[in-house]
View (cartoon, rainbow, N blue to C red):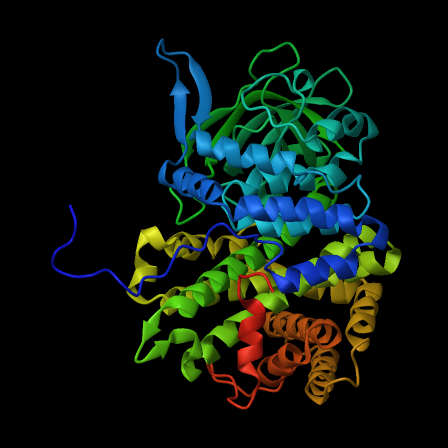
Length: 545
């Protein structure tokens, strides 16, 4: 029925039908910077295709459907047989299939694989974040499996495949497979050395039966899982398949699915093992060392995922303010709103540039870059994921009451925002890992200082921040209590050095003034009014330039 009481006007068109990659200048410039010239056209082509899909109305609808219809546990069939299956909405499978087909589980064996995959993950996460969990774990499992050449030979081609096959079957009978991870238990949480799950060796070399539980097991319909359990020689890493080679189900009792704040399209489960067959990965007693490569890679994905959420929130806010009129003009032209948008855009660009620099270090693979990652990944994971929630909350506020309504998509972003700060070690764990790298690995600090030193002399505020950081590093008194402060300062200095080297002058100037020079308030929208804020906002607009 046509409205007769009023005329609908001053409404913002949906942000749809755009290229998520090409309209993100910070990301597209980072890809060009970190990709070899002979690969650039190919990489741009695949990311452009993915970006147009992510920005399409169809894929955005898949994301909404996957979150409106969360997974459902089917513990038993109609006859009372235990099946322990999780049903997902068809939209989830469409999103996951498209992502796998785009190579988002394949970084380790392709030229420039980490940069192109990280960029793709940043683009595609903006369509829907929940299904990124199995993508991330599958990608990250490769370095752990490579400690056992036989396992790697069998599983790596499946994990890096561009084919997604849903359903539980022996992995060897599928064209592609997904892998999950189970580390934490009720009594220990992050303290995995307190795990009580037992691994009893069988007669065959490397084979064990597991008895125990996992308190968090994400994506329980994956084809296999890397898990930790107490073997006779100590805490050990194992590969646990859901279905055994003969087609029988491995004992894997899903007790319930977690009712989570966000990430609702993805199933996170509590599971129990009772005589569950598993294959040892690495040596007995070296489980943490074996699985740490997977943990490091998933931590980088936490940085990339947070950068993606930030970018989408900023894009939505700027898009809204470009069209919405109030008090005699469009919002984006109002000085105070422009200040808010510019502040959000700075945070988003700094996160993107840092995430892509870390991905490039993985591709480089040199000893110095590996040392750099050892300290830069936990520092970045600590800071970038911490900044995600307040940024998304402020971006939501730019839409006013409309942003608080589910139809805007902003509440889903806000619920998702805290996830990456908690997963794979919350803030204290990351800060302590920074300290551990400082104390045990001198090469890590040297590599970090060399990286930030490349921008020395270009901005006096950055130079002063580097000096303050060195003073902080030289003082070991009460170092653990200052770990968060130190991780924050290192992350900000690193972001500032990258922006000074690579971002436009107006972006680098605003970042150094506000984040390093202290010329801002405690909230967003408190940048110095003398900065070129209009150029910062225009750079972040989600339109083709």
